[in-house]
Every structure is written in C-alpha cells, then in structure tokens.
Length: 320
Ligand code: UDP
Ligand code: MG
Image 1 (cartoon, rainbow, N blue to C red):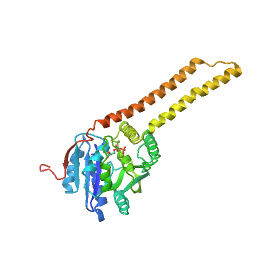
Image 2: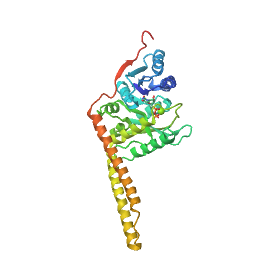
Image 3: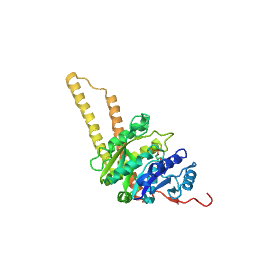
Image 4: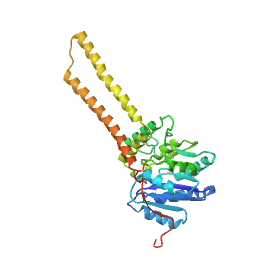
C-alpha cells in the first residue's frame, strides 16, 4: 500500500529541507516504507525549488516536485498535489512545520482501523497562543469565529479545529477531485463528502517566521468558504433587516409615549441622522453580500483553469 504526502510550498526556503527530512524520518520505518512526497511549489521566489531539487538528488525516487507557473494560492496548490499523487493513502499538510510530520503515522494507523478520512484535530499550539489555529491576535480571533461558524452547519458541517492536515483513502481523494467548481475550499469539500471520519488530536506548532498567507487572503478564503457552501449570509441579511426595522418602530412607540404623557417632542434632527445612518449601513452590507455572490457566480461562469502546472520533476536533471 503506497502513501503520498502532499504539501504546498511558497517561499519556504527556511523550512522545506527540515520538512522533507522529518517526513522521511517519520514514515521510513515500519509499514509505511512505500511512500512519495509531493511538494507543490506555488510560485516561490526564493531558493525553495533548488532545495527540493537537492532533496530529489539525496533521496531518488521518493520526492516529486510539482512546479506551478505562478502563485495560485494554497488551496490550488493542494489540489494540484492531490491530482498528481499516486498513493492508495494520501496525507495533506502544510510544509511550514506547523503541522508536525511525526503525526502522519498516527493518522495512517487510524485510517487503517476502517475510516475513510482521518482529520488531525488541533488541540492548542505549542507556546501557548490563544486558540488552536496557530495564529495570533486578530487572525486568531478570525480563525476562531470562522471555525465556530463553519462547524454550526447542520449536514456538511466542518469538524471543529481541523485544517488541511488529514489522511484520506484513494476513493475519498478521487471524490474530492471530482468537484468542478472554480473556487475550492478543500476542508469544506471534504466535510461535504461525508464518509466515515476519524480524528487524531495534535498540538499545532507556532510558525517560526511570518506567515505566507496574508490576513487579506485568509479573510478572502474564509469569505469564499462561507459563501461557496451556503446562502447563510443572505439569511443573516434578512434577520438584520427585521432587526433594523424594529428599531424605528420601538422609537416611534417611545416618541408616542413621551408626547402623550409629557407633551415633549423629541429632537427630530438627531433621530433622522441616527436612523439615516442605520439605514445606510444596512443598505451597504446588503449590497456587499449580494455583490459577493454575484462576483462568485461570475468567477464560476468563466470556467477558468484553477492553476497551471509548469513541470513535474521526479529525477535529478543531468545538469543538477
Ligand atoms: N502556501 C502556498 N501558497 C500561498 C500561501 C501559502 O502554497 O500562496 C503554503 C505555505 O508554504 C504553507 C501553507 O501553504 O506550507 C500554509 O501557509 P501559511 O502558513 O501562510 O498559512 P497558515 O498556517 O497561516 O494558515
Ligand atoms: Mg502556517
């Protein structure tokens, strides 16, 4: 039974060598000895690709370097890696060593107990940052809220505190690859598929340096994930609309009571300014959510390529 380890890399020259070494050390002994590491270079501009090529020379036949033509983002890179992985069992994880490769054998063991997919569940971060995501400050709060939101859905709920670190059977991977949508969010698609999931807990490591995914693209990913899987934001707008309309109603009753009981007219200018602002905010948020869905429809309708694979390197080049 062959194992594929799939990891995206973007400017990870500081970690990629240790990542490959730790993966090899984690899976070499024991029943997992037949394995490949699929590294997807997502348009790195540093020495990442050269280091991976060196590793291909050091460990012939174990590493596949998939070069994308530019930076397409982590989700596309994972998709490219999954589609080029040949294992019967496939593990996906980040290459920045936040997901310790030593957990891989535990995931595979669990899978072989009869599960279709095994998620690595974060139970905190070494070093004691708030939340299990490995982020800090506002990013940690955003990640926490996003996970709360995505795990409250009824049928295809995202398991709590899981990310990209998971182990899948070949059939599961094939189903995952069969979705045709342009904007992909693999943890959401995996949850959508269902099957029989298992869980292994682990402590996420802190990132040794600056994250490669900016807060902006993380927010965009969370927004895409939320809107590509539900029309829940539209329902939220409905609730917002009801709440917004109840405000002037309450104030109208209050004005009525004030006037009837004490004969006191309210400051009309203040009231108009306040409710004008409320109405303006509501309109803006409504328009922005609708616009987001329109934008997504536009993106999907173009049927663009999700990414472009420039080359796949498995053997050292002659001039290497
Ligand atoms: N990554 C990628 N393309 C990108 C951004 C990130 O392939 O455009 C990779 C990155 O090298 C890392 C993983 O995706 O292995 C997660 O990135 P990051 O640590 O920035 O995300 P976070 O851990 O903050 O979710
Ligand atoms: Mg990371």
